[in-house]
Image (cartoon, rainbow, N blue to C red; front, top):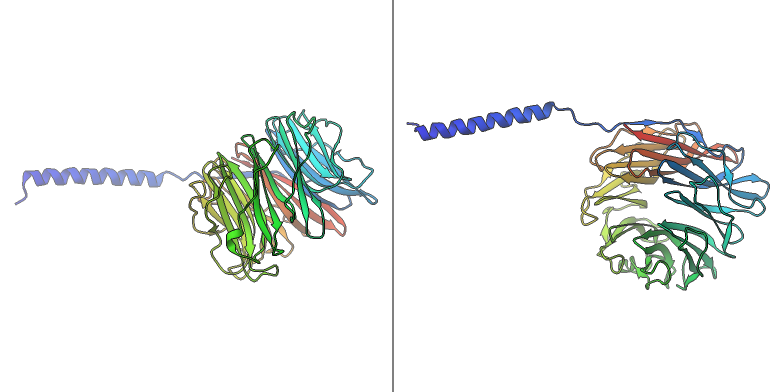
Length: 446
């Protein structure tokens, strides 16, 4: 016999189960929010019948800046800048920042607020600053009579420029100059006499500190990844830390990327079994104490074959690492995501998964939006492919061909607005023999 208590209990659980089923049914009927974007047309920013190359981009507010080198004069290469003040919808005419007299190469640009800073190589290391959103620029300053590969970073009123000075076939010294008045004047050069070296790949300024990551040739003539930091706004630097030293001798470490947020420093790089490799891995290390020390190496690729050319992005507590990987028999773009500041990473996700080869991946992240671009040969000619996520990499939009041209499209780079609403993609388009131009498209989240 069923007691009254049992009946009451069963009715109570039946009511709860029915309520849950109704709730689940209603939830299932609520459509998922889809991340959608609109795209502007492809714009030719350089637009000359000559060879344009070495472009970089920066964004601040509604202003977008693109710099590049252009061989528009016989035997003289110039550095140009174009600015958009309407979030990449249109661009003003090019401004020539170099002298126009001597060859100018390797421009780099940083924007912060209304300030825009550009450095390049022209009979040494040159620098120009704008304090009105790129409308006008101060006269060029010569920061060093010799040097290669300038890098820039800026924070508040501080500007940092670093460059490499070769001292031999396999040796170089790294130099840095700092400005604390928005680039109007610079202090003396600080020389980091590392003996062997090939230079800095990235420079970052964060919370009055400066961080450099680079590939340094050690005693075994194999590059290692090192980090140097300055807690004193670039006046002096702490001893360098070799992040790849634990991997053993004769293993070249290259293409290091660095990102800094909330006292945490994240570094990724590729490490191969030889200078002519049969296997390469993507390695990651993080510091939780402003680069005073680093945790153990994490092998993110975890497979055999070639894992190459990583990119790194941060958004909140999320860390995104993407690279090109040939574990499928050809190169695809794969991604791993950490939601705990780099403590652990998700499983590897294949973002391209196309029959062609994919490479040269570039990431941009802000808030919940992650955007990814890469080169892909699926269509025959190399094109620029694109995917985006509106939920921190949990799901992605279908692949889109942004260049979709019969000519070769290469070297994509993507940046994002602070809100993540706008994404800006640049690439090089080979229009004909010795005619390469800088192309640009904008994406807007809806």
